[in-house]
Image (tube, rainbow, N blue to C red; front, side):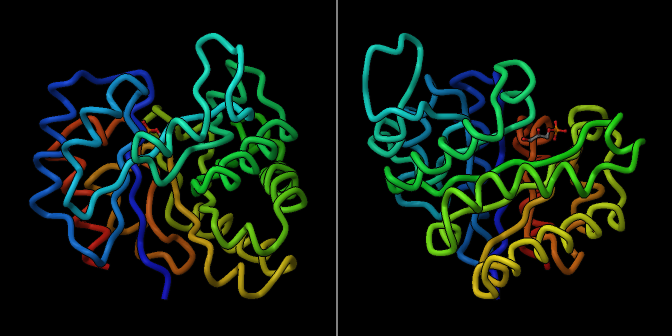
Length: 250
Ligand code: 13P
């Protein structure tokens, strides 16, 4: 059985105090049944690493550069994230695709770089509002996932996590219904099965987009939803802990 994963993506929010508050709250309740990953902004990885030490929590980066090192001012490599204690890294978040013009090709290269550095990529896919209205959601997520599976192949795909994040649900309070999310998750699982049955059964597919304590349980109860990628609600210690509890109660 797949172990549930809840990842908190802080985006460009937070303070050192928030690191103390959220990790302090979660340390007490985290145990083995659900994996909890915090993805704070880069400057907070050091303090966060000190605080998660010896707990069941782990850390993730929000992005990485494809190179091991080099003259790329402002960028951070997978090797650095690993060195700071990260186990995961998000790639292909819709905000990276939209505001930093990241293509499917670049996302695949980033996923490959993550695997090379011993990080588990959390590969984000998801359609925007216009694409959903045009009924193109399946085509879009299939294309985004295929770019990564074609590059990584079955064996490396077992190290990845896939996150379905419909863009129209991110930060809008408009969560996909459990039925809408499950439909896409089952489709993504089917795409993974075409690559390899083992991959389909082992890869966790997370849902992201306005996950809150009040809707987490119902979302996580869906057959193909293996946890959540949580933005805004991961910035509140009590709220995020309640979402993790909902995941543990599965
Ligand atoms: P919200 O939970 O704030 O909608 O953000 C979702 C997200 O983008 C997580 O990566």
